[in-house]
Length: 328
Image 1 (tube, rainbow, N blue to C red):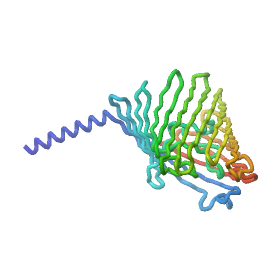
Image 2 (image 1 turned 120 degrees about the vertical axis):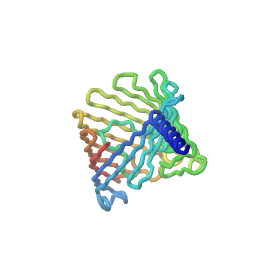
Image 3 (image 1 turned 180 degrees about the vertical axis):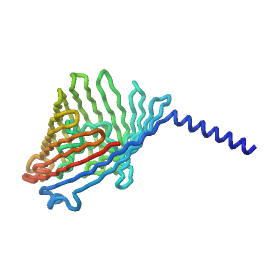
Image 4 (image 1 turned 90 degrees about the horizontal axis):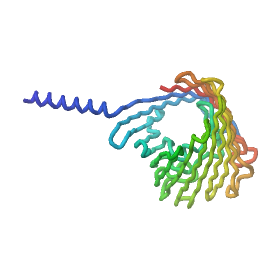
């Protein structure tokens, strides 16, 4: 009798495992990147160039699971930064077909204004022109985690509606914290159907923060146009903050030399408002980049330079990076 029970339980467990295997799929992705960095400039963190080793090594792992049910396709992504073996981002997505997609985003920046804050074309592997330089980090104020997003399209127009209540808050802005009753609400719309090779879009957001500012408003518009091997991009943004108004103009060009090699040039100009008492000049960022891709391997190099960093006339900041990255 005991043997029969064991056989029955074994058969039941086998059927459940078989059912689960058919109902869901799990994949694992990964990446590794070796970098060499050179830094210089007038900011305290850049003086004397890089402290320590200029060589860096990054490793990432991602787990993707998906399953079909009566609602639609449900997928889960969890990414890990292997340097500290810690979760770096995650997202739960429910794709309901024509009824749209609902996502609970934990740091992937896959939705809303965070996803569209810099749409300029760049060479593969290149960072934004403003990234990794001191003086004026570019943030949208939108929450970077703990957010719920809804995405759909109407007559060729795509849109994201994103809301977060004290979920990461404005923690991506150094002057604010995620505590209190802060919340962010953003709407982003874009379309690729007006003309072959062209994308245009706009975004608007409002961030309520009781800890340091009352209301922060963000707005952006952009356009990209690809013709042949050349892609042009233009984007404008306005950040209305209680203590730091900014008007931003960005433009760039990317050129594909062939199927593997590409070059890019990006420029960002930041007009700082009267609230920034220390500002004596407008902040400018310039980024140039080149890359060569061979299957899952990419060799890239970029140089980002900030002039009048943080609004201080004559203050410069420069970062040059060469990377060899692998995707598997």
